Image (cartoon, rainbow, N blue to C red):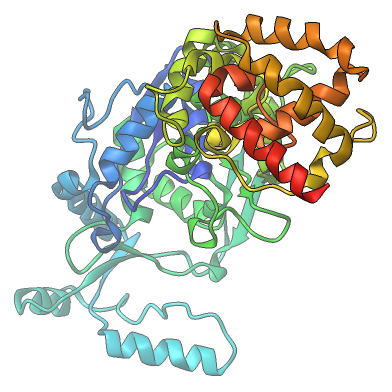
Length: 484
């Protein structure tokens, strides 16, 4: 039997990280087992559909490297792969269930349902449909259908007994049938509900393994009753534990948690995000943490899936991203960094290649880059107290003397390169009677205004250029002369 898995998102907006992780696990399981990975768009809830959301799904899968074998955009033998385009598929199956007694027409009005729901709430009970329309005669049903009365089709859940299913993570799950509601299969607009469409589509598309969030655990017994009613073999269920923002709540865009698109826009690398996501709920064999997507295709297994929720840790993702940045070739990092550097600096005025060399081992996330280099574009205001450094044995008075000594040295340099700046300054320091740090720390502060910079005094001076360096040095020296 060929493994066939599916990722079946609803086009309701951004790509939630939990959704992407589900897609990732589903994709990896199919690839590991030489199977097929299918994309299906579940858009039966038309009111929640967001324009452009389908394109976000396509782009997210493409960007993350999760190529599907069948889907709306690539076709396949089981199409259409968009549920709204399969509308005519579902009604015959619903009517088959009516004939077998596993479903029935329901003509209850919204007002009646609202009254029943309010009555249940008044009693402190959970509302459950009372099968009011179940025992209607065929003649009465036909009369109301002929009259054009609106209706839905409901699943006829047994009044007694148990319904259950087997799950890879949770084992055997079983509930009493009298706790289940007769959920709607076909809505008044003729479209199927998710609960019905996913069962029909999974069967018709030959899906062998269903991976989805554990919020569907409570619905799965009803799905299995449908499989039994049709005489179909249900798929293998894998209900995944959630990705949490913290111990109390799941990730939520409404709470400010990032989507996949948000992370990429913030400067996280795709490979780092995928590597981190796969470990949120799955443990590989051994201590290894870093995997390429092809490597994951070779080693992913269901045995490593966790039974506990995973917490999304931004600090850990930052660490992963930093490690991936370090692994980039200098050329690849320069290409990735350039748009971010250009947010703060004019590419025509600064050596981005040299900046990238200095920054690659310092940055964790690319959106940090503008703030790491903006001092080059404009000298920031700073507190002269930062001239004080115990280890370097400097303070404003020492800095005043160091800057005065270095001014003529820098002014004498005509060939403004890092090497020439280095050689001239290092050659001049012994004559000052100061230690290297007592000169280099104040010099870097004087021309950058920052305690932490990508590179030391020589690199910063080179990047600024001769005129700007001397201008900043003079201004800082004048300020010290007034304050010390």
